[in-house]
Amino acid sequence: MLDIRKAREESEDLRAALGRRGAAPDFTPILEIDERRRALVTEIQTVKSKQKELSRRIGNLKREGQDAEALMAEVRGMGDEASALERRIREEEEAGRALMLDIPNPPHPSVPDGADEGANVEVRRWGAPATFAFEAQDHLTIGERLGIIDLPRAAKIAGARFPLMMGAGAALERALLNFMMDLHTRRHGYIEVLPPFLINADSLVGTGQLPKFEEDLFKIDEGGFYLAPTAEVPVTNIHRDEILPERALPIKYAAFTPCFRREAGSYGKETRGLIRQHQFDKVELVRFTSPETSDEALEDLTGEVEEVLLRLEIHYRVIALCAGDLGFSAAKTYDIEAWLPSRQGYLEVSSCSNFED
Image 1 (tube, rainbow, N blue to C red):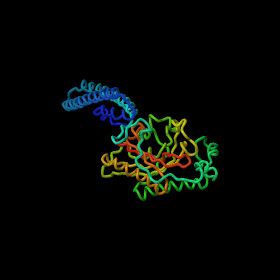
Image 2 (cartoon, helix red, strand yellow; image 1 turned 90 degrees about the vertical axis):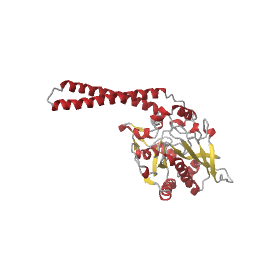
Image 3 (cartoon, one colour; image 1 turned 90 degrees about the horizontal axis):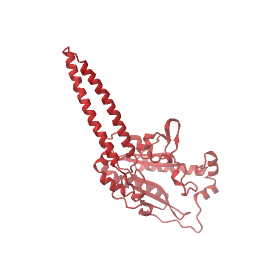
Image 4 (cartoon, rainbow, N blue to C red; image 1 turned 60 degrees about the vertical axis):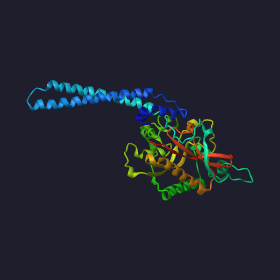
C-alpha cells in the first residue's frame, strides 16, 4: 500500500494522479486517523518519559532508605495508562491501514491518459500475422483432434475451466516451461526459485490481491491458506519486511508455478479452450531494484519477455496500458499480445509492470 507520509504530505498530488485512473479516494478520514494516531504517540512518549523519570527518583529514594510507595503506585498507574494508549494506537493504525489498502497505486507520469483499454497505446510490434490458404482453426479444435487437450475429462476430474493436457500436449507445456526458465536463468541472469504454492493472507496483502480481490482467489478454509494466483505473490514476498542493502540490488528471480484463479470477474468474457482457466502454468520474473533504476528495469524485463516470442517466431505487439486500465498495484504496465490466427486478433500473453515502492 502507499506510504502514509505520501498521503499526509502529497495528498493533493495523489488525488490528481489517482484521478487519471478514475479513482477518487477521500483522504480526509485517513488524515484524521493519522493525526489522532500521531497525537496518541506523542502522548504515550510523554507518559513513558515521565514514567522513566519517576523510576529514577524511586531508585534514589530507595538507596536513601526513604519511602517510595506513593511514587511506585503512580508509576503503576502510568503503566496502565501507557497500555491503554498503545491499544488505542493499534486501533487507529488498523483503521488507517484498512482505508489505505483500498487506494490503488498512482500511475507513472509516462502512462497514457485514458479511461479504459480503448485508450491503450501500441508501442511496437514484431513480425506480421500468419496467412493461410485455409481457415485457421483454434487451439482447442486442433488439440482435441490430436488428442493432446481433453477438457471433458478435466471437467469430470475437477470441474469446468480446468485443463487436462495429454501426451505431446503435456510434453509441449513442460518443454515451454523449461525453455523459458533456462532462457531467463542462463541468459538473463535470474535466480531460479521454486516457491510454496500455498500462501498466507499477509503475502496477498503484500502484492495487493487482498483485501480488494479476494473473490478471485481460491481459499483453503483449514489454516487460512490460499492457492497462489501467480508466482508474483510468493516471490515478491521473499523479501517482505526486510531492509535490503543497496549494494545487493538488483535482485532478479524467475519462478515457475501453477496459478489458481476463480476468474470471478470474467463473466461474459471468452473462456473457450485454455483461455481464462481456473488453473494454468506460468513463468514469472520479479526484480528488486533501486528507485532510480526501476524504469530502466521495466524496459529490460519487457525485452526479456519479448525474446521468448522472438525465439518462438510468434507475431506480437507491445501495448502501454492507459491510466484507467492499469492493474490495482501497478504504476506502469506493458501488455504483450500475441496474434491468434483463428480469431484474427491479439491475446495478452504477458503483462510487465513497475510497482515502484
